[in-house]
Length: 109
Image (cartoon, rainbow, N blue to C red; front, top):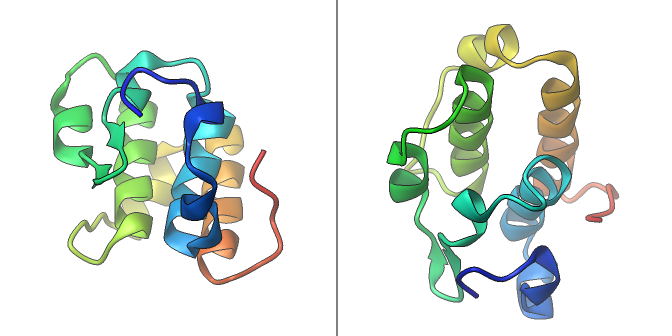
């Protein structure tokens, strides 16, 4: 899946709520950004490499770290930081992703 567009994401991943939540963040906020998609593979998502790339704004970095925390329990971020650092649009994307993770009905674009 490296260097592919969001349409190249296998359908099987879309049935898992963690994958769906993260894909919602990626497809809503980073849909055409190769800095994100090159780290999405069939084996998983290399969040540390993606985040360490270094060319992110503070809000983008926070949203990516929040997405990583939604993806698995090994990644954590302070909810205070998420709430205080995300702009309104990114905050709404994060809340939608959180709903998706819990098995909610938010659609992944």
